[in-house]
Length: 556
Image (cartoon, rainbow, N blue to C red; front, side, top):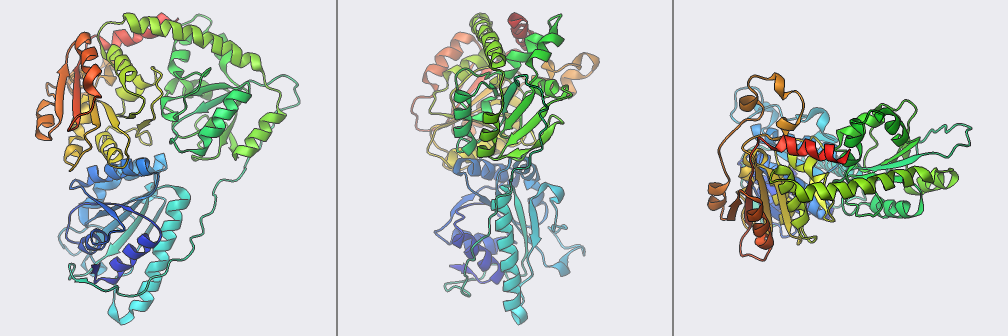
């Protein structure tokens, strides 16, 4: 069955011809022509999610799992505004989402019609491309079809070229629900001209000195399928480059710094810390991937007056350290390194130093009392390698940077917001055959608990909640001592648990309040089950800050 509205028929057919498969639909009336077109066509996998904010993050996770564009379909009015947090996240995380928003015809705008806002261009600068289709008109339909086809195909070019979200706004006049068994007209797909947006754009002056160069490679967020991973693995094994990478890099390499703050934080307290930092600062910084979690490495590199920074092709090159000289393709960067005289003592010195820190890290973890720190250490050690890990922002992702793991890890670090972490993990779980575990704090989980309102969640989906009765991250950040109302307005203390939500959404629920109970629970938590599982780890908020700070002191 097809929608009898030409613009709806056209866009569904074009997306089918161009191989787009995953469609997340939120219910509504104005988007009925699109819902009919997608749901009645076996070429599409349709997902029904009521809450538009959750639906968009669900689509984000689905796009991550499938490594392909995902379509979001919503009705008119505030519905598409609920997509906005996800659109911003996808824009800065380089995830391709295609928003199809239904709209009223122009003659019904700004006259007091219900469920109507100004939708055209609503995402402003947070979108890679935005367009408005023409309203269907039988008196001039061939011309309208031609214009709309051109606009749709241009949107698909931008979607695939930028790997960022794109918005198509589509006005529909009533009637909305009419269907037909026969195609309205023949639709042919053109060859999309997808051009590589990244060209070598490097301007480096290394100077005439014969001094060997200290070269650092810093790797942020990557996808498991990223081309850079293969080359970075080769670079690490063949060049005397100091490698620093975060858990979101998907790299599992030996002889690298896999916990950046574990390296840097102990140096901050030393009397001669400036000498150590000068020794750590590189001459040439190579970056790969997207966002960096560690604030310490950002601050250190930004203090370097003569840093030369080049970015490896892939994620957009951002001038995070105020020293970006350009972006290079893989072969070009390899050729550049082969022409340089690299100081291999730089790598050897810092890796020897880091191995000493790793030994002290293990000793501190072993002896640390029950707390957030100890619980996270046990959790990340206990997650089987076959599991994909999704993490909420704030405490969860920061603690994850302290403990090495071989798992593929994901976190919404584009905008680093609290919202959407549960929905993203659920969407990813629905889009992969791999088991998925979400590690989250209590506030992030409760904020996005609507995500569990999803049919047919995989039985191997797991959630682990660190519940310290509030926003524990604010106890770690400096400055809380100056606030008279810290617990109410920053930490937002509460007494809620996830027990009733777990029961309501039919999760197998278990909670623990002590180390032995946590160890016993983890022994069976990842075993086969007939339904998803949720483990809630209750910790006391008062001692978490001291135990974390003592970790860094123990490394000095």
